[in-house]
Length: 185
Image 1 (tube, rainbow, N blue to C red):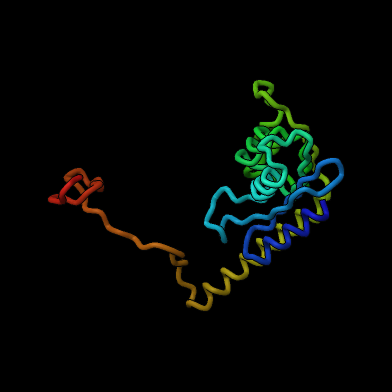
Image 2 (cartoon, rainbow, N blue to C red):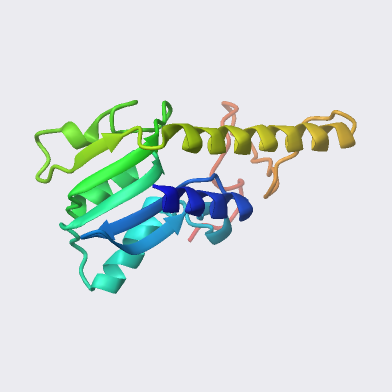
């Protein structure tokens, strides 16, 4: 789990939510990963998935039944199902995730008897250092946002990307998919 915490620190340094993961087999590190959805523009690039992809490539198999995952935050539904599809033996996680955790916090997908594979779960391993890392990261993020807001004179936050496009409304006031008079396909 200490290696996973180091990976979480790498995520923080990259501007990502600090979550790290390590995959082991027979006591040997096979792959590591940390959160990368922002930097890779990939919503699936959670630490678990990044490590899982590396391990599957290295072992040349999409099934990893002798592997164990160590992750600093309780897995979400996407990661949990990927780990079960890969047939992981065990998952160890540090901090609980009361908003999206599915190893007991919000749901317990790993406990569903209807599923065809059952991965053992162990939670709370080095929970305090992992929780502190997350608290410190989000505290720093909130302070940065407050400082940016103050520098702009306290105005509302602007949208980080894109622009608002006003769609013409029909007679009932609902936006139309295409403006009137436009040529369809």
